[in-house]
Image (cartoon, rainbow, N blue to C red; front, top):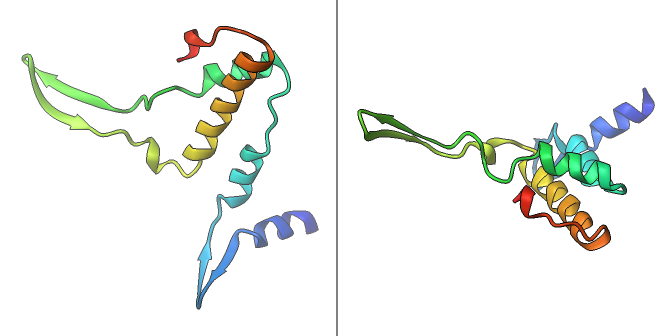
Length: 105
């Protein structure tokens, strides 16, 4: 319990005179510290985290583009850490294992 409260208290950052609540900081740190140590884990990470935002869409009616839904992945508070984890996994597969990563791109 003490460790949990310590981790939660690190989510509070004092900047100047205001106090920002960063609830995702412990989770972002955890994802950032995940290690890609095996080819199996690297392949699984590369498969699970998409290369492009899957939510971007064009809405087409009768052959005409009616609306465009922009990529919403940037709204994800863990987006940068997940992209970094995927990059580390691909680098591990290419550099350490010598695998062809073109299937994941």
